[in-house]
Image (cartoon, rainbow over all chains, first blue to last red; front, side, top):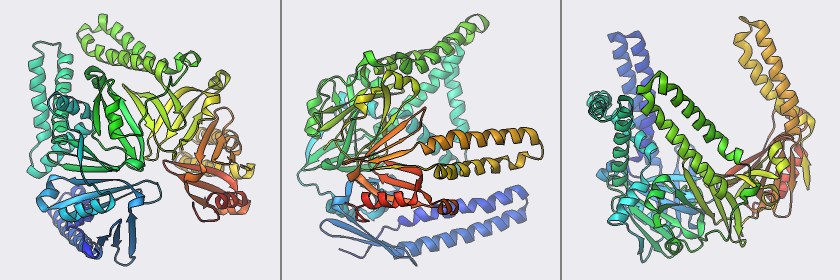
Length: 458
Length: 138
């Protein structure tokens, strides 16, 4: 089928640039600050918007797509026409996203992720719902689906907790507040701050003042993070159909991801502090330029690795120990968290007689530094890299408070060995493993003679 | 097969950074001539002594299955890339590099871009032809 148009929502992509351009006349009007300049800026803004809308409509009119049995073809451009043909062999994963505004207009956003980094690495199409489903079926077809992971009850709760990402949720909250401010003309950011301050005053009845504010802020952030994770993971289900892993879920934004099993480049098991407490580990997959998204593909119970093997048959736990701690340098692992801990304790020591009322608040960074020290100590004993019988590569590394256990399934990787005079004299080096999706795994203190001969899985 | 970076190639690349430093120093000449001059001389020393040495120590080895790039004397960095996953090569030459017969070679593979700065043009072309099978990537 060929000659079909994108959904009209495609034009919004170009209208955004027009909105950004509108800021320039408004800025000039703000500097001059009189009615004439404002009128002139509004006229210019209207002209810019009309022009960008005309360009966007022309581009939309000139863009068409079609699909065959195993390929999708896109033609675009007004003066300079280009034609892209995306075959099934070039696609490693795809995501069909339906945010609320797309659902209201019957549109879907389809992102194709390719398995090499030859340009483009990914491509986004704005299609009608039926067209999006047809494109997804043409590139990564799914027949009979058998659910491999469908969290319910306590599993659902742990899945929500392990999917929560404080950073993205906080950014989303800030962005949402700003959008609300602009749309409704009310200062919601100030309102949120006032509410937080009142809650902190209430908490101060039971806790010291500084600590009360920190605890309230942490509670507010965590509550929002869990709410956000709850919405993202609503109705989450992972299926395996032939050679394709399909995950679906989301309440406001419905997301369907399809990953070709033969293109999976790595499987990352993240052992975060929450995962340790719950004794359940989230798993992220990467395939080609696809990094795994913001929701894990599944969560498995500690010691139940066979459930992961059911989803990904190529997964293999390490054959043996990944490192030789006796040959490692403890200083390399412990100096950063150790220095942070020493500094925090020194500040606490000074505060204990100079400003005792601040002591509870200053204990927070000391506790965090101590936790980081423990994770680094664990890294000292566990961090390493090992080839499993030449078929896969097992990598273990720590970053901040999380231990990552990665099973590399592709030979399409690169190694960088980093040395310094001290490590050379001790026969060690740091190994950076580059994955096709652009992620890097840093293993510290690997044995130099082994690192130089690290194989590429077949 | 082994390729090295000649001193003139390393010097040209270092000269770019030295020029950038001189450009940044421009607004400060009028107010504090001596300290700017000292800063610029220090930067030139860093560029032409430390950086040029590091760049000229770059060695590119092409084995049967993978490519190894090693550079640096005190802090060596070694990169290994499988040959069959090199997706493209890119040779860039500035006017000064055309005069000295050197170039920048970019090697693209999934997840990482490897740069060999200051390589001889003839070497870079031979390497590119070998890696891409005469322009036909496998």
